[in-house]
Image 1 (tube, one colour):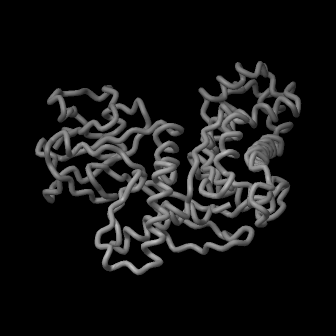
Image 2 (cartoon, rainbow, N blue to C red):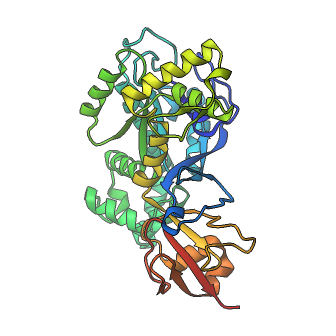
Image 3 (tube, rainbow, N blue to C red):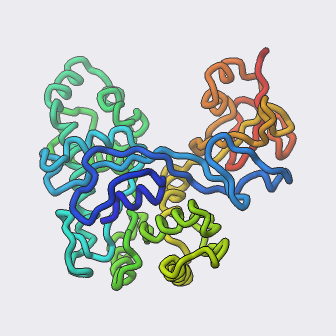
Length: 387
């Protein structure tokens, strides 16, 4: 399916890539980067990132990516390495499901004739496995839990949120879903079907998913991708070629080309230094980008963070000169949820900064902002604290 290739293309981490099922046994962790317009152009300066990097006025902000062991049908019952995979999901904010959109990999991870397998099966099966895992977590102690809630007259919303806080379930979410599914406030009356519906909605909300439709460069894959878009209109599907992105990033790493991840072109630095194989490879990549506009890998990362998670980029600076104490210009760029306030942002930087917050200054508008001011994407903020 190309899961490990996608991970390596995103992070350039050294991981095993092989054409056999379930190459990944233990999880791999790496750092990828989401791309945003850098605010350096708004201030006519050149930034010096401490984390991440900046290319052609595009700021690349780091995010943690985990490549986990693959699933087989029945994983929620412990088949394959299902228990390990599902346990790894607990710490994830969002899931990137990498599938082989060309239909050249079956549900067991075995290579098959391109086009002979229906990739929609992979989307359905993974969602079912995670739904059933959530259901299993609910069902495991539900009867005892429900009786206790009823006997102690504990409010069902608070009780469920507390019980499943490890899965980032909040009281507001529980209240919303109970109302949406018309479940009522007596948990002892909830049937297994009620619990399954509740589990499915919890999964959708706490583990949102994007589908990376890999191997779009294989013959017939574009048509299959179009069919998937029709079959799953409510899903976020992105066509991509991990192998192409990996080749581009490796070529850029070895200074053969200048390439900004996610862009539709690249520049060969010195063609005289390339051998014939390298020239042919880069010609193929040029042709691919002409046809597809992007490899899709960077798009997947950007859509995951900015669309699914609904995060924004905010720049904290120590002085109105846009510098930190060491003179680095715009050194930090933080990813925070939409609707984050100035004081919440201060706490994200450091608890002491939050505790001693007095006010902040929006350095684009030069306006003083209070603690409850809601920040916007690409805000540049100087925070004033008690000395």
